[in-house]
Image (tube, rainbow, N blue to C red; front, side, top):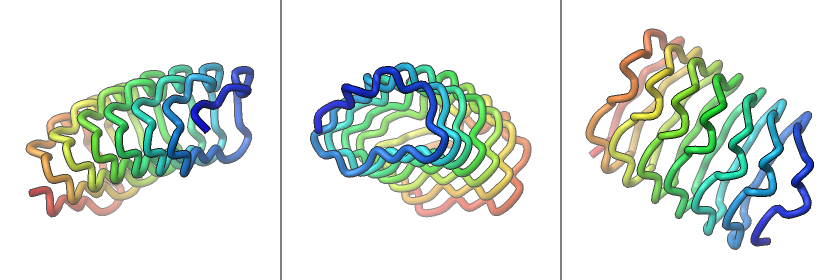
Length: 167
């Protein structure tokens, strides 16, 4: 599977959207009309996915947003219209992710925020609008992380704050 052609008219999903294990998938352009996912949105283990273009009109994720192990994914820019996540935000194991740009509209995360094993991510710029996390904040095992710039407006973490093993 190299693309999602055939899903161009899809505007909402009243449940879960998993896009996982599609090693030849290069883009999500066919999802350009999608505005909401009422539960979990998981984008994981897509070895050729370079960007998330196609999710530009997404305004609501009713549950978790999971972005995991997409080895050539370099940015998150299509999430510009997403203001809150009503679950966890996990950004883990994306070896080519250089920036969190695209997340600038997220103000609140109702669950946990986990940023882990993103090998070349050097900062957290992109989370500048984030003011509260109702769950835990875990930032760990990010080898190139040099600063936490981007969390300057964060005033509340409802659970644990764990920062470790960022060499």
